[in-house]
Structures are given as structure tokens and as C-alpha cells.
Length: 264
Image (cartoon, rainbow, N blue to C red; front, side):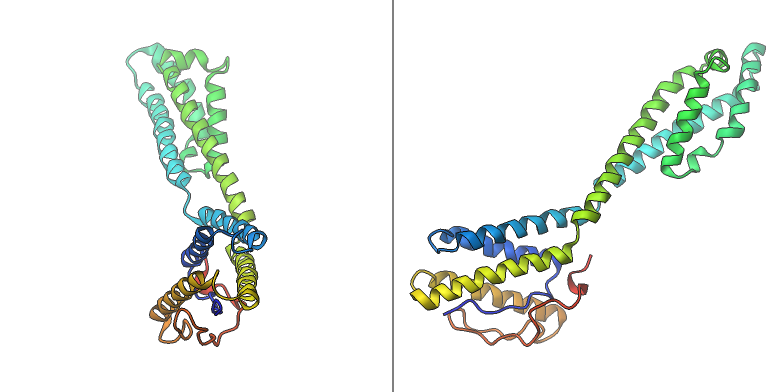
């Protein structure tokens, strides 16, 4: 008896991870120490965890939606403050009208900031707020009621800055740790080492301790073969065999040649 060879390069990324999680669960159930594979199993688990972490980073970031919502909020506050200045330039109160006309000079500088690149907009709004709080404009801003807009605008803008930092950190992590292809290869290498040890121990010590594990896992491998063949065409997953006998070896090479079936 032995665990059959299986070329899993045609598994999609999620399938690949599930394949290894299933084998991990089976070894855990049978107890790695009892099976005399504890060292190989520990190394195998470490590669699975690394692959799993990378897979989590590949999923679309929830921060993207938060960024868009926060950006929309600050845009509304920014353009609202501009509109207040414009409207007040026509105010019947001469003092407010004069104040608004002085503030209107800022519009030529900051008009269109809501259309700027995300981080550029953050910087422009910070500068805009700084000018509104300056000695030159603070009295005029107070006179037309613009001061009460400043704090909400600042809070919304800084929320955008924080989300941008979080997103950039996440993207750096994805680029550094999310190399799923490389991590898949590492997991497969550790898996093969573990399987080879189990097969060697079976040959050396007999089937009794390993028979149920081998039978059950060979059955699951056949299920994965069938899944690949259903997706890619008859025979693409390799030949299936009975669970407790050595099945026909797949004709494809053991090492992945490209990433396309499980690509990001």
C-alpha cells in the first residue's frame, strides 16, 4: 500500500489550499506522533499556513470600499464649503458679502481638488484648511459661517489619509507575502516529503498503522482527479485507482510548469 502520486498543478488556488487542509486534518486525526511523521508534519503545516495567509491577502481589500465612501464624504464637504463661499458673495449683508468675496480668492487655488488623485486631494484639503484658519482668512470664514465646516472636513480628510495608509500597507504585504505560486510549490514540496515518509514507513513496518489513512486519502485524491477532469476535460486529472491499491501514475510532470490554472 502507498499514497498515490498526484500532480496537483491544475488545481485552482482555493482547491489547492483545501486539498492540503484536508490532508492536514487527516494526519491530525491519526496523530502525527503515532504515525512517526511529527517533524515532517510540522514543516508541512508551516507551509500551509504561509499559503493560507497569502491567499487571504489576494482577496479584494475591504478597505477599497471604505476609501471610496470616505472620499465621497470629504468631497461633499469640500464642494459644499466652496458653494457656501459662492452663494455668500451675493449675500444681502454687505459685511458677509465682502468676506465671501475675499475668501473667493481661495477657490481659484483649490477648485477641482475633489477630482485630484486620492493622496494629492488629501494634501490640498490640508492646505485649504490651514489657509481658512490663518490670520488672513479666519475672521472672514467666521463671518460667513464657514468655520463650522472646517472640523467635519478635517475629520473626513484625515479618515481618508488613514485609510490610504492602511491600504498601502496591505498592498505591500500582498506583494511581499502574496506570491501564491511560490508558496504553492513550497507546500507541495513539504507534502511530497511527508507522503514519501509515510510510504517508506508502510513499506518498512507494514500497513496496519497506515491502512485507513492511505485508503481514505487515495479516495480523496481520486475525487480531486475527477474534479480536474470535469473542469479541463476527460483524463486531465490523471487516472483514478482503487483507494487501497497503488493507482495509475499521472502522466503529467510533478513540478508545476505554469501558474495559469491557479493564477491570481
